[in-house]
Every structure is written in structure tokens, then in C-alpha cells.
Picture (cartoon, rainbow, N blue to C red):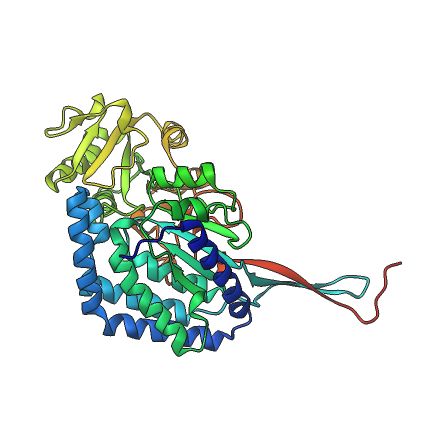
Length: 421
């Protein structure tokens, strides 16, 4: 790995080149962007062994660093996951190009014809941790939306991200687009992150994707606007009118399918009327599946549960752990979520449509679900091809951030010698 003595100069150069590339990319045809993504997908698959070899170096680095099993799972790439990256690139390629889309169209009494149309944001900085697939997802989505992107991956995924990035740049070259449209910061030095946060002349928005520490740092120190992707403190509320079979299927999937993703369930709220029936059954099933259940007093008679502490409420485990508590009613469940949640994703399991509506309308999380696994909190599953993150704030983008969410808009106003009285 090359050492860079002057990080500010390195980042300034990257920013200048990204801004120049963004000007070209904003005017690139949909066909050319499509070609770049398809070519990148082909290069990723053709280079899969090189990517796996690079990932092996990162896995060794992660083990030496003492990463948790969940974090190591996030980091790991195999042929199946590389196929997923390829599929994601192709899915983004096949989506409609958002740039130039007419969002609204009307004519004023004055005779002015006004259109609101999508336009690229410009240069996007993406700061992420140990998931190398974000390199492909973020690069593809920014390209699709006509934006240049500066990617700063986590130190753990340095080699994997570099191998994937090389494929993205080859796709750009094959399509005749500037390779500076997708740049990867070529150093693990944390000073590069600090520089990105203040590059107001060249970066239009920062997207942090990682844990609370990373997002908190970005929100505190950034002078560039931020799309916040906060923790996934995901709750599932089991209502008294829940279906036992659905509860078992959904909760086990939401917790155990992949524990290290932000859509994994982290807290189970159980209505008191079903605590000794459905609740006991699902808690026991979680324990049988290897999940450590941190429960309140009402559930501690169940064999194998652990006593919850105050620290278990509002905790993102990203591991085979879940908090669980009994609540008296829907309002108590929603109060708990408002107190301890992160406005990411929350779910209700019930057959009572009125109760479901009250839950969906009464909470303000970016994603609210009814009778479905929270592991669907994912841009790909929403039909976006991929996502750059799940924004938990309320400004501009919210929920899964796909290509359309990486655009702004402008007004096109046409007249015929029209003057204002």
C-alpha cells in the first residue's frame, strides 16, 4: 500500500478531478451509463478470483484486528456474493435513467410552461466501513444518477474494494466515460475522512454508511451536507392478534438470516396477552436457533433467557443477540420504539388491520412494515437495484437511497416572449 505524506493535497486533487468528471457525467447519455455498468458487471465476474484473493488479505487483516463474527461476515466475499454484486450492477443498469425525468409539468395563466426535472447532485462522497460490496453499489448508483463519486471504504475492506473499483473504472473506460467519475481513496489514513468532510468546494453531499461511531463523527464534523444512515435499532412488535405461524417464520428470519445487516431485528416487543403463548414459543425458538435473548422480568421464566439490562434497550447488536420485553398494549410498544429506536425500520405482526394502521401511521421510522421480515429493508428488495444506504433523517432522501434519491431537481420555464405585468 502506497503511503501519502500530504493527505490534504491528495484529497484536493481527487476532489478537483471528481468535479470535472461530474460535469461530463451530467450530460452523458443513458446508453453510455448503461454500457459502463454492464461492462463493469462483466469485469467483476471475469475478475472474481482476483477479488476473492484480495478479500483473503482483508479477512486476514480483520482476524488480526479482532473483528466480531458478524463483522467478518460483512467483510467476506465468495463466488455467490460476487454473483450478487454482478446482479446488482446489472439491475441498476437496467433501471430507467432518472436524469432528465419530468417530475411535474404545468402551465400558468400567464402562459408560462414550467417543468420540474431531475438533475444530478454533482459529487457525492461515500464513507463506509467493512462491506466491500458497497463499493459496487455506491459506484453504480452514483453513476446512474449522473454523479461523480469519491469512495472511502473501511480499512478492513481495503484490498477487496480496490479490486472491485478497478472493474468499475474499466467499465467507465470501455464506455468512453471519465474514469475519475468513480474514485476510491487510495489510503487507509483516517485523515482522508477528515478532509472529505470539509471539501465544500468539490463535494456536494456526504453519505456515511456504518456504525454509530462513524455516523456520529461525520454528523459532528462535516461542513458538507450529510445523508445520515444511522444505526438499525430494529423493533418487531407482536400484537395480541398476531398469527403464531407468521410470528415464528418472520421473527426467526428477521433475526437470524443475516445478523450483521442494518435490517436485522434487534428488539422484540410482545403484547402481554400472548406473552405466555406466542411470546414464549418464539423466544424459545430463537434460543434453540442459537440467539442470546436478553429479556425483561416477565420473560425470564423461559429456559435459556438472559436478564436484560438498561443497556439492552436501544442497542444494535449486529450479532446473534436480541432484546425482548412484554408490553401492555400498542401504545406502550410505540412509546418504547420512540424512546429507543433509530427511525430506521420497525415492524408489527398482527391480523388486526386497524391496529396495523395505527402502528404504521403512529410511528415515523423511515421504513414501517406489517407482517414481513425486516430483512427486506434493502434497496435491492425495494426494486432499486441496490442502495447507497438507508437514510434515517428527514431532509431530501429517506429510507433506501437509490439512484432517484441521488438527484436534485431544477425548473425549466418556457414562454413565448412572455413578460410580467
